[in-house]
Each structure stands twice: as C-alpha cells, then as structure tokens.
Length: 209
Ligand SMILES: Cc1cc2nc3c(=O)[nH]c(=O)nc-3n(C[C@H](O)[C@H](O)[C@H](O)COP(=O)(O)O)c2cc1C
Image 1 (cartoon, rainbow, N blue to C red):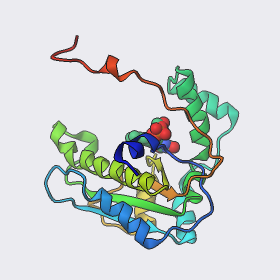
Image 2: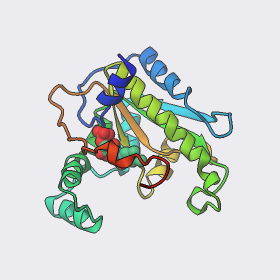
Image 3: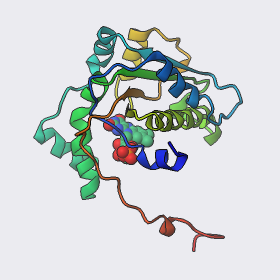
Image 4: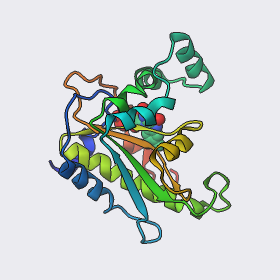
C-alpha cells in the first residue's frame, strides 16, 4: 500500500473479525515500530504479545464491559465534550473498551523504560522517552493498516497499569503507555467520522498569522 494511502486509511478499529493473525505478521508490524525516532538512541522498548485468550481475559478483567446511557451522558457532561462529532465518537468508543481488545486477534502491550517520574516531570525533556514510544506506536498503527489490519488503543485508567504488571510480570522500571489490539477490521465496522479539519487554517507561515 502506498504510504499516503496507509496514512489516510488508518483509523482506530474497535470491531474485529474473529480471525487469527500469524506470528510473522505481528513481528513485521512491531518491527516497523522499531524504526521510529527515539530520544536517546536506545529504543529500550519491549512488547508483550498476548495471543492466549485466558491471559487476555485476565488482563482485561479490570476494564468496564459497558456503560449505561446515564453514565455515558454524565461522562459527556463531566468531560465537557461539547462538539457533537466528538460526542458521537465517545458514544461509539466508550462502550467498546473491553470488546475492542477482547475480540482483537492479539493484544500487544508496549513497554518503555521510564527513568523519571513521568507524572511529576520537572522538564519537558523528561517526557522524551514517553514521546518516543508514541512515535513507535504510530508506526505500528500504520504498518498494521498497510497490511490490511487495524488497531484499537486504550490508555490504562486507574489501576489498569498496575494490574497489567501483575498479570504479565514485567519489571517495575518499565511503563505501559497503552493497550493495543490488532486484528482484521469487521466489514461492517462502525465508521466514526474523522473530524474534518482544514489544515490550511492550521498552518502558520513565518509566525502566527
Ligand atoms: C493518546 C491517545 C489516547 C487514546 N485513548 C483511547 C482510548 O482510551 N480508548 C479508545 O477507544 N480510543 C482511544 N484513542 C483513539 C482516539 O479515540 C482516536 O484516535 C480518535 O477518535 C480519532 O479517530 P481515528 O483514530 O479513527 O482517526 C486514543 C488516541 C490517542 C492518540
């Protein structure tokens, strides 16, 4: 697939076919991640690839399996989601947080070595390692798209990160930035419209004009 086609085609996928994915394909997708830029040249990243469904179910045990209409309305209110398209996105995404990982062919947990307290960083540069792994994650999304797969993404909330560490046994100095589900997008997967942006309005030549 052409590079720019992959960029345009990449979307967050939350509805997956029940399909196996070959180890070689997973490796190829993760390898693309390792070509991302990195702050300290070290790419001290690891990936836990979970194909075993029992482990996936245990890992996801702490993620809410759904949300009531009342809770959804409260979330939209409390998070100040005023844009109607944004609300549409959340109404589609929030109820699928569990399923979009449980139904994926594989769950991948990226890990970065975090040397400083990321939540109380004294300098912007302390976040460089975190920023680097997100470059890596985007490469993974694009590689999956180029191979006709798709990815779901969840940021761990509350104790989900600590629970993941307990279930998967990774060391204390490694941090999990997100859960990734990879699989074949369902043919009738819900299309959440991407917010249309006229990028010409967002480019400022030679200053904020
Ligand atoms: C930093 C970050 C955090 C995100 N967190 C979640 C999440 O927790 N759950 C989820 O379903 N999607 C999550 N997403 C996906 C966004 O909802 C999605 O990228 C956005 O709505 C645009 O849609 P698109 O990816 O299909 O273009 C996240 C994306 C980013 C970049």
